Image 1 (cartoon, rainbow, N blue to C red):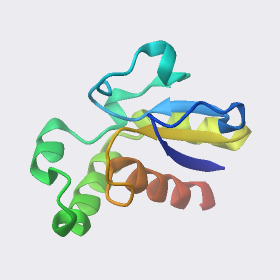
Image 2: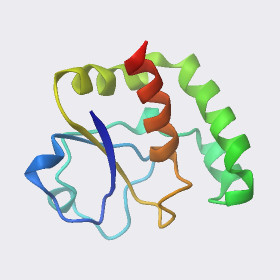
Image 3: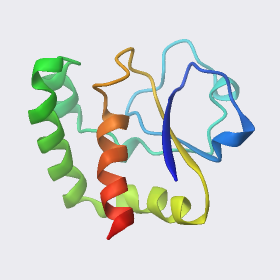
Image 4: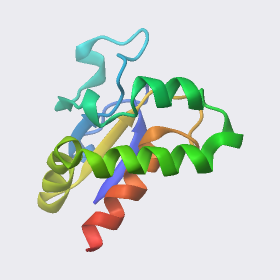
Length: 117
């Protein structure tokens, strides 16, 4: 099972394995506050794609397409998440204010498809 959660929300032991899926460290947070099991910078969108998207909801559909292409080209970046999800609950941590249009939402959808087949 894969869930997503803002990194600024309180830690909960029911989160399971916690992966930070951001290329940049979340502002104002210490390593202790994040309570992550692993920081997977490379699974985050490329710097170029992140800057192009710039959290613009109008670019969401195209962002998802481009990000999926990046993920398909780099399975080694997301396979550890999939492996952990097959063993138990996984929480993807993100820092965006927009809870509907962010890389963790797109990554979860991508991983959910790969879990099924």
